Image (cartoon, rainbow, N blue to C red):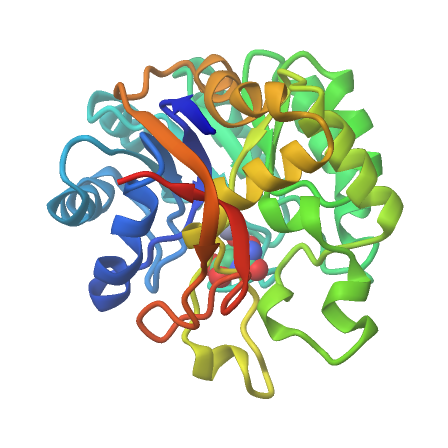
Length: 333
Ligand code: NCD
Ligand code: ZN
């Protein structure tokens, strides 16, 4: 039995830079036609020139059959001139990180709704940009995403022509808010569809499922599954695959980020199949994203075969989800 996915897209991906980029980018480009590339490098990708140089480094590894959709790290440096420069360079995405909420977000925003940012939102709206948001506050860990919802709603109401993407939704209550505004959409990861707090710390602590926002309650996972399995057009797949070296995961001060790229499509196929939802996988991973973000991915027919996939213990020093385990769908060469 085979399954063909036409131009699957990963709308939230960390490929890092240098040796790590060379290690992980081919894993994603083998499965996806396009991906939104996160700008949280050190230092972050703040402007179009840096984004284009980064894009070239990615394409040098993946080849042109993979479309990296570059995003700019939201900062006060995003002047109208810089926004227009980026637009002319084909960049239409910016990613807002509240300060300190996740890996490499020290240069993020302290006060989201300050006057200066409202002006930037206005400019982004006028220039047809998409604002992707890491929607968490610095509050209590299980409430961070929920506490951010009034901020998201305020931006959505004030800038009705600005497309907002709530990234890596983890809380059932966010799904309702995203569905209540015409200009809000959401990405959903594999790990938030698969895991709850029990998988992270119910038994022995598992650093490989530690991420921001953290996985939550069974009812949150179930609500995320419900929208993904229904193919709801407000939501699309964004893996948030975020590689950290094993030494940075299996230690104290473990970094936040789940590396799921090697298993992304196989594990999604298995999950959707197990819940009788295989017919919605294409909406979730192929069709919804181009409609939300208004882009055309390169033609890429990706085939999976129903056969045992033994996941490697490590990919260049990085531990993947399901490392050393097996899945029931394998990517055809
Ligand atoms: C991401 C990373 O490692 O860059 N980590 C994570 O836990 N998701 C950053 C992010 O997307 O929050
Ligand atoms: Zn991320």
